[in-house]
Amino acid sequence: MATLPEGFAELKQRMRAMWMAGDFGEIAKLNSHGAEDFIGRLHLKPGTKVLDVACGTGNQSIPAARAGAEVIGLDIATNLLEQARKRATDEKLKIEFVEGDAEKLPYDASRFDVVVSMFGAMFAPRPEVVASELLRVCRPGGLIAMGNWTPDGFVGQMFKITSRHAPPPPDVPAPSLWGDEKVVTERLGGKTRLEMTRQHLLFDYPFPPSDAVAFFRKYFGPTQMTFARLDEAGQKALTGDLTGHWTKNNQGDPNHTVIKAEYLEVHATVV
Image 1 (spheres, one colour):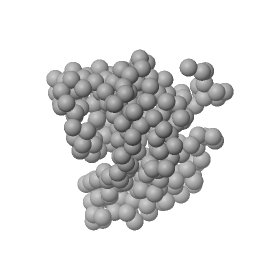
Image 2 (tube, rainbow, N blue to C red):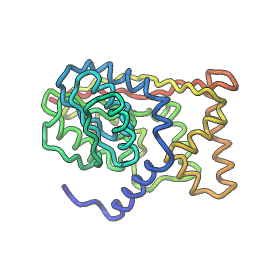
Image 3 (cartoon, one colour):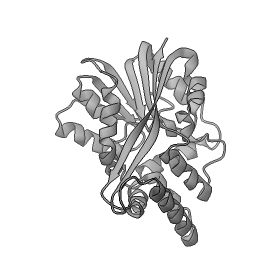
Image 4 (tube, rainbow, N blue to C red):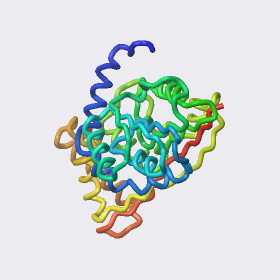
């Protein structure tokens, strides 16, 4: 595979540090039900060879292994992999967790029956490379299943707010473009048969929207590092905008945050 363009090696290191910041495991615990539903819709059979790309703390890997699949989880963040291994050990599940990059998967072509990535591979900076790699390691007739935040959904809009205060690196496409049906068709459609549906992940947090913002600032690496780039006035402004966003979309009460976060579920059968 070609070497990284100038500056990309440094960008990769920053992204790795970003995902290792905070403690995404705390976020993942509150999202695990959505991952279980996502995996449940795949109807995995025992013995199915599954690769979970950008697996984080194992939210998708764990239910896939419970279904009897042979699972490998891959992620760039070593601290998240440690949490994933502990979760698998606690459940007595045999899952291999590997440090690796969604843009350079360390596997032979057509190795897997199912390749999944939920809110993971969408964040890699070169989507065309990610698409090529997902297609490469999935066998003909196999399935690529992705869960990607939509541009207009709650999380996509949260990313837009954050980007206004702290612009992302130039020339890196917005991750939420993976949540646009037309873009996914451009990236995967030529070599797959696509089925795409809009789903919702329920954020159900036992605290008010302002505390939800603080929760993400503490535990979600990208949010934590965005705040770290800003001065005191910038942090205050970002806090205000994010709190307004969470409050406006809250379907709970002032002390209980309930939000339906839209994502695009992609099932791409390799042809």
